[in-house]
Length: 292
Image (cartoon, rainbow, N blue to C red):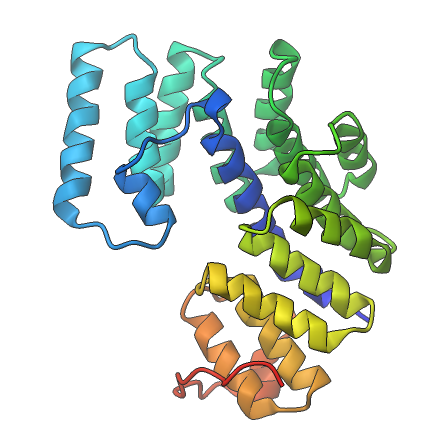
């Protein structure tokens, strides 16, 4: 079996881990009612709310020019709106004021990962961890993902070996590194443990499904991908993997085409060249009925 299933998981897992790091109390997560949190949950947020939040951040930067929270807050808002360059600029401004400002480190690491700027992410997180031995393991997990992305599997495993076993972020990272390694079939137990540690993670269900496919259990894998979509119906990896399952395991190209059409509404990467197999006419937008 090819490594097709791990390819699409990379960006999803990174997002899950870095968002988890940004959201924990040690790193100063967002409070209730925050437009950033609403956007992350897929809720509609009016332009007026975003504009008001940005105006507050800009006012804060004027009134408290030495306070790193305000440029971080602006970066948070721009990142939520997918304005990555503006977000990164503000986050770097926050770190220029305080290189130890953890929320800015975490979010900037996420942006670097999404932009495939892994060397910068490694430098950022390594320096932060050198100065903060009490940093949460979610930060180390994010570093492991950057290392894996550069091909340094051993370095990623070494970072993860220093982490506690019980955290859901570390279990998720270990699953991912195992899936990307030389023996992805061995990742099933790790993937199951990650899922048991956090059943509210769509990424964990997606990665468990990938591990099930490597274990030759496509029916259960299909259900895992559907469970991921129950938590996040726009998760690109789960949509893509369902297209793979329907097309290559259940030989139902119509269902595969429908899942692929939904995937294409959210992402464009096609590591398995499904477009060639399923065709480029993806006008059908109806959803498959569910598991067999």
